[in-house]
Amino acid sequence: MRLLIADLVTELSPVYDETKRLAKPFIYGGERQTDILLSVSEKTLDSMMSRAAEGVTVGKMENLALSSEFCRKAIPFGTMLIHSSALICDGGAYLFSADSGVGKSTHTRLWLREFGERVHIMNDDKPVVRLLEDGALVCGTPFDGGSGIALNETYPLKAVVFVERGEENSVRVPASKEIIQKLYFQTAHFVSAETAVEMLNNFEKLLGLTRFFVLTCNMDSSAAHVAYEEIVEKKYMMLLYGDRC
Image (cartoon, rainbow, N blue to C red):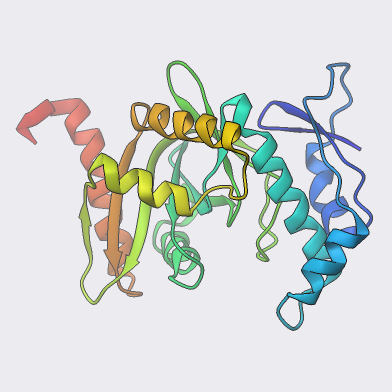
């Protein structure tokens, strides 16, 4: 099975239905050479299943293993995983990233409720960012964290938002050092020393291509409106009026 993921021709042979189903929208029938070859051994799956939480199927574990390998092998191509919920708003992608359990998906679902047809979720766990000379693109993948949302779409990246829990809703701009630290914990791990250097180069390039925010929020619907006003609306005002806004 050959797929086109983030413009990378990716070859894999999934055994279980989970990845076969998610991969269908990404099937590639062109003649380009394969960029990335993925494979997962039964031994690896057995080891992962022995450590998996109760209720996790071997199909989901295969999808996780393939996604991890893809995200490591994509790094030299200027492509990086940001563990996040990819929210599409007015034609742009906003990545809401956080540790598992913090509530990034809960937050983006508030946007769906509050803003309706203006927004949708492209991928709720494992989108990737493709770095270009003049910008960055958020690309869907056939890899899923359990939501079943894994669309084959590409949108320009507008911002990366690190989500933290709090009683009050607020947005701040983090320093570069904090951004790098947070990105490190939300991207591919267990990479070689050589790939780690390329990964850090990707981080530094991304710093110059998009905006970063830290969103402290509760689970009230007002959190979506505070985030929208500070992250989306304020940018449009600055484009129109510059520093006067």
